[in-house]
Image (cartoon, rainbow, N blue to C red):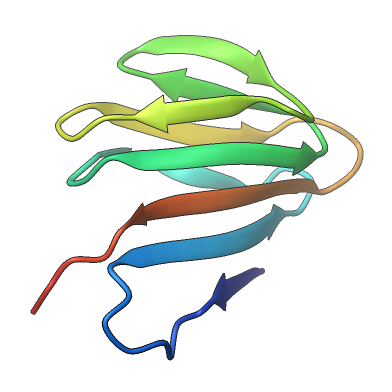
Length: 91
């Protein structure tokens, strides 16, 4: 489940999204094509960045840089709710 804020705002060069990952859900491991910030609002999970795994929970902020790889898996009993912010690609 996800929600994009400000998606219809003209000439805004940023994406600002909220996602809720249900128990067992995740964001697959992938290579980053832009800088991206993850901020955990609630829940718990495991982030894997460039092959190294670490726990994330409320208040955790993670910056992934262009060219790096990462994935995120929900690991707690409640939804893992995150905010994601990144630069919008121009067409």
